[in-house]
Amino acid sequence: MRILLTGGAGYIGSHVALVLLEAGHDVLLLDDFSNSSRESISRVKDLASRTLDVIECDLADRAAADAALKKERFDAVIHFAGLKAVGESVAKPSAYYRTNLNSTLNLLDIMREKDARKLVFSSSATVYGTPAEGVERLDESQPSGTGITNPYGWTKAFNEQIIRDVQVAWPELEAVLLRYFNPVGAHPSGRIGEDPSGIPNNLMPFVAQVAVGRRDHLNVFGDQYPTHDGTGVRDYIHVMDLAEGHVAALERLTAGVETYNLGSGEGQSVLDVVKAFSEASGREIPYQVVAPRPGDLATTIADPTKANRELQWHTTRSLADACRDTWNWQSQNPNGFAGA
Image (cartoon, rainbow, N blue to C red; front, side, top):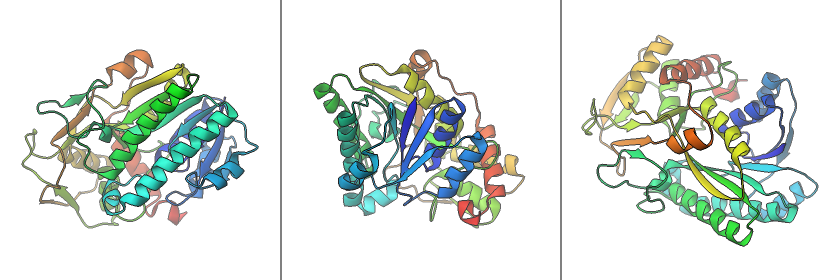
């Protein structure tokens, strides 16, 4: 298949592009490079020993998107494009709603005009909001679109609903919503990985930057949660497992809308990650405990049973693997792609 990847130059998109190329698919990558690097695409081509087509375009700009995609043909779309920092979304809600919703609306209109019926949407576990008391493992039957604590999460929930509503009006649309938990790791070559601009929003890249000397310590937000060591527990999924989940979802597409959790089904605490990364890197990770952040949950773990069963997809990589691969990436690229 020829597959359009929107936002395909980013962390997850670049790994998915590589897996798709290695699986024999043709890739058309669209990105505005506002929060990603052209170097990642160059490295994907090198790793795959194949080329791919690249379009620079802001998908939220309808006129630009129409012009960029007017003559393009594609069989399926994996939609990553959008702003993605939780904290920034609180500070800049209008930008998040405008960019993330318009990108999806424009894409769906263009897909229908081209009769391109297959869509995999990059969603997030943030759509579950604050789970009911006592619920730690989240399956797809849990309520979503309520109790969400930030605009980023709301844009994911709204986009899920937009896709469902469009499918009612366009019954031939085949859509899968993939709710990611906490992607971590890098390609085992160390050639591509997570390269956040500014201060990392996620734990693993922050720990990696401490290990490589870019930052002097890690802040641990709270150590009094009801967990085994008092720090927050999350479900960390290796980005290569996540990328393989997208290929599995593409193969599963049928008319309608299906939702799947992509996670490991296991929980690891902040201090578990610190210890595992220290072991993988051979470096001490200095940290200090600070006050918990408002809205942070004690524990969030995926129940991936539905994806295991229906997509025939399972995670195969451990937290230790993710730490090793992240360190391989960060130690080779201490300043990320900017150092290339």
